[in-house]
Length: 174
View 1 (cartoon, rainbow, N blue to C red):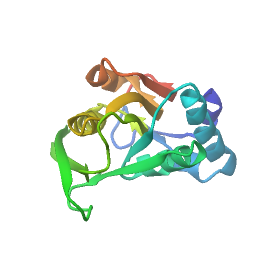
View 2 (view 1 turned 90 degrees about the vertical axis):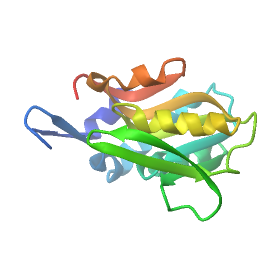
View 3 (view 1 turned 60 degrees about the vertical axis):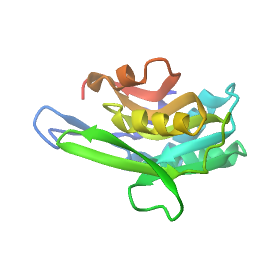
């Protein structure tokens, strides 16, 4: 599964000294890198029984949509507040300097549906924790959470204890 790692561009000291920024745009712009990323996510899900894929704006769309398409599942968008046209539910989560709000349509998850969440990156886990709460408030059951990349030094998994979390690539540090 580490094959995707060779497509990730690492930028030292960005956005600040001591941080290595892991850039996924280099994965997306290379046909083989993109295929490897999606194929690895599909492999992680090969034995998972689920009904629908949920992906947060915007890179969760990039990775979640082809997974849903390939596995013949529906796709549910989670967006920033104010971007969805129908009745929504929302959840607030903490950022480094403040808070943010995400929303999903109130009718997007049916009670009892088995849900997989797909996103590009797990850092602190706050966004996905908020999404899990919304899914569960609608009666959905989160059966797996899949990330392309994990930054272990930010301990995002700690916020998602009790859930099946997998990452294609995992990095020490932040």
